[in-house]
Length: 519
Image 1 (cartoon, rainbow, N blue to C red):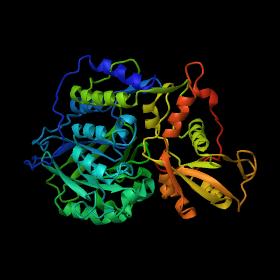
Image 2 (cartoon, rainbow, N blue to C red):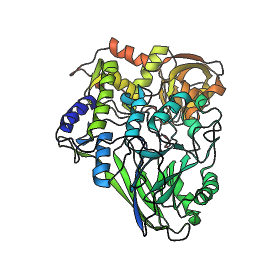
Image 3 (cartoon, helix red, strand yellow):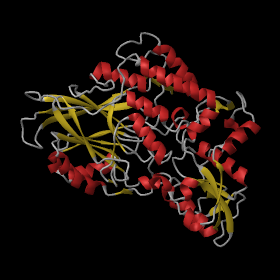
Image 4 (cartoon, rainbow, N blue to C red):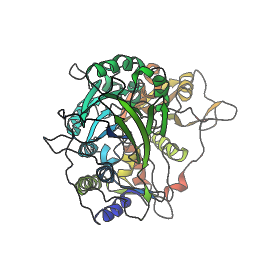
């Protein structure tokens, strides 16, 4: 079942018994409340890498209701508070936090430059988010607009300058819950400028994560925090050794992101967690605090649990999705279908993102359209699968959510070889055989001093994912949106059930397996 049909099926389930609290306003700063006389339990609800996956999805026999079901579960099962405008949740016991990468993903969000996801996350009552490496995908101005709409602070202790001084983040925020002052410190991966369009990061510096924490955590305690948590758009495996070197920080928990993994780990008494991606899971961290104890000794216990939000296809969601949020998402889905609902093709099997059948198909189409000798695409340039069934314009915008353009260069064989082998990309027009020799599509070896026409995207041209293209050819030619050649090809080569795209695919890897790179 494709995602569009899945959305309709889940909307039908939503209509059964959808009731309950409609108070889904934005999170707001909370005034202090009277401290509890003894130990207090707080619940932190942590997600990361939401990537605009706010709509319900059915795939591979499992369903998840999207943001509306997450919110309903949080309210009914976690006691989550989402304040109405002008109100606060200072007396509540939950705090929802994100590890970043909120907006870029399916067409429902990306086609509208992240606005739908920003509106949805606002209604879920998040208190703060780390700055993800994809937050600035649509440019600095759009980021600032979406951040205002989402009404939460973006945090990056290692990002300078700070908000108010020409930057986009704060190092930390203080949030009140049940008389407890929670210090939330954010981090962004040092790789961020290499993971997006270079111009979007002008004037921003991304420093060492450990140095930033060493500087900021004492400040947060000094500012009055009873406990400190860290939310980072940094993989948990990289955060673990940092925390292990600093037992004096006494962190209540550390939430990681960026790697799209799920994990529950612990260093000393500090849980280090990852919640995966796409609102498929969240981590519940239960923290018991006693404000009567000395500074940095007020956390009595901290326990993390991973909550899976999926359920069998065809069944009703375990909790009826929040009706107000479901209505908002359905409205954005209608707008997406109106703009991108045209069906341009068909495939009888799912083509996973970053898989040889999918990336070979895409790069071959770009090579045909430009007449290039070779095309190079970065890993994880494709963000979701082409699902089995109808292929719409929305499918293409979901697979390629970034607003990239094609760039044509003239490179020597030595430069082409360097770019093919440097950064773990995908290719068309060249292939490396068992002998290690890089050969053109007609079998001729790439000659070191010969000149070749090479096409890539503007993201990689300006150094994204570590590619050296700009240095290799400073006078490259910038072309059209990378989606347009694909749309033209589909319209010129009709596919349908029984004669789908799967018949035309090259499924063989063209390069040896690449090292893991970040998303």
